[in-house]
Length: 199
Image 1 (cartoon, rainbow, N blue to C red):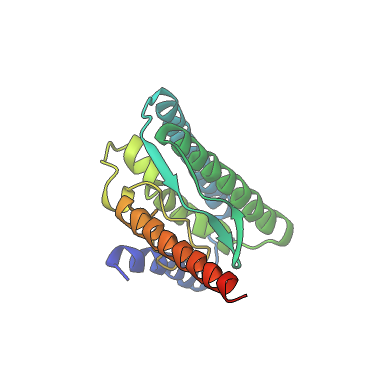
Image 2 (tube, rainbow, N blue to C red):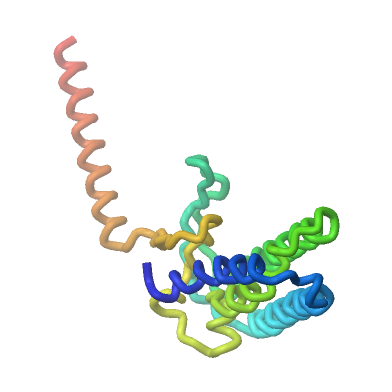
C-alpha cells in the first residue's frame, strides 16, 4: 500500500483517538463541529458543481471502454463503450449520489443517536476524499488523465483497500481470442464431420 493510502486510513483513527481524549461537549465544541461538518458538505458539493460545469462544456468524444460492473460475483451492469464526456458525467452523478447518501446517514447517526465520531471523521475525510477523486483532479486541477487518472476509473472499494482497474482487452488480445475461437470452431466442425462419416 502506498504512503498516500496509509495516511488516508490513519486519519480516521487519529480523529477517533482524539475524540477519546477530550470531551467535546464540555469544551463547547459540539456546535463548531456541526458547523464545520455543514461547511465541508457544502464545499464538497460546490466542488462537484464546478466539475459538473466543466464536464458539461467538455466535447471530448474519445471512446471509453467501460468493463462490466459486478457485485458479489453477479454482473449488474454489462460492459459498454461511451464518449469520454458521457462517461465523466455518469461518474460525477455517482459521486454526487454517494456524497448525498453518506451525508444523510452521517446526519441521521448524529442527530438521532448522538454519535459524534462519524461527524468528526467527515469534517476531516470529506475534503480529502473529494479532492482525491479522479474527476476533481482532472477538471478542477487540470491534471492529465493518465496513470491513476486514466479512464475507466477504478470502482471505489467500500473497505478502503487498494483496487486495481479492470482494463478492457487490447486489440491484440481481441484478435488472439477471435483466432482461438475460429480454431475451436474448426475443430468442432471437423469432429462433427468425422462423427457423421462414422455413422
